[in-house]
Amino acid sequence: MRKSAAVLWMVLAAGVSAGAQEKSHAVEEIVARVNNEIITRTEYEKSLAQAAEEAQQECPKCTPEQLKAGLEEKRKNTLRDLIDQALLVQRGKDMGVSVETDLIKRLDELRQQNNLASMEDLEKAVTSQGLNWEDFKSNMRNGLLTHRVIGSEVGSHIQIDKEEIAKYYQEHLKEFVRPEQVALRELFVTTEGKNETEKAEQKKKAEGLLERIKNGEDFGELAKRFSDGSTAKQNGYLGTFKRGELAKELEDKVFGLKKNGLTDVLETKQGYLFLQVMEHYDEGQQTQAKVEPEITERLYGQRMEPALRDYLKTLREQSYVIVKPGYTDTAGLGSAPIEEVNATPEEVKARKMKRHKKFLLF
Figure (cartoon, rainbow, N blue to C red):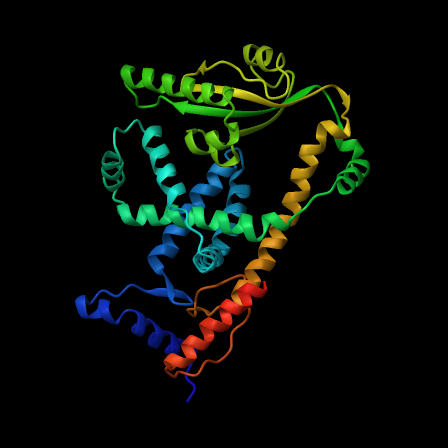
């Protein structure tokens, strides 16, 4: 016998939350189910709040109208992104990917970044903000796992050859006629709310990070992990600047540097920072060799989004995804009536085997 989607959803939610109902009358609302995992309303609302923060951080100079449009786009895709992450995490587990070593490393870097003596101190700092320590680690683990899967399953298959770069360069020659300018990235360490002793420690931290880069470590990776600036998510990338667009003292420093050149640690009202010149462009038509990394990044970015969406579509086709009526999954493959029957253990096993076989073929 067939039932409406709403009734079916209530049955599914009851099946997942039966144990919780016995313990408490307060039942968490389930908004989506991805194979054997669920996405709750609490998780959904947290992601909505995070989307608002990200929209502001990604475009601090946006007009209210632009900010509103960006936020609406993020909110529209919030549930889709939660489902995508669940699919990628599950795929990573199916592949046997382990990120425990990376997790320990990342937690220790976070401990150092906050000048904490031990991992126990980091746990106390996390829980003091009302966060659950195990949930905090789980979220970080899932982020690392997702990044690993995307790199292995999608990014590694995107190849940009020399012919494509040359073709793009010739078709966009006018875009590479430029005044003298520098592309910069930063690593910023804040001193806001710090006492004098703590400020001295922050300066020492910035100097230590600068020394690590001079010794060969990657600037972008360290900026992503340790920078307190809003550019951390972009590996510290600040943008490209012409003469006259920077403070005179800073302009004199960076325009005197060649590619990969580093400034000393500079003190500002908000903290300490140092800059790296990613590229120093001479005035006029830039050579293909000079802009090749930029072209490669553009082409890679153009291909990554559709390639990732195609990959996620494949994962969805191989998975069981259901969304509660009233919520929108913008990548949904459509709905179909589902019979409200209990699957036998043999059927469950067959579905799992079928899913694993498809993964292997992919």
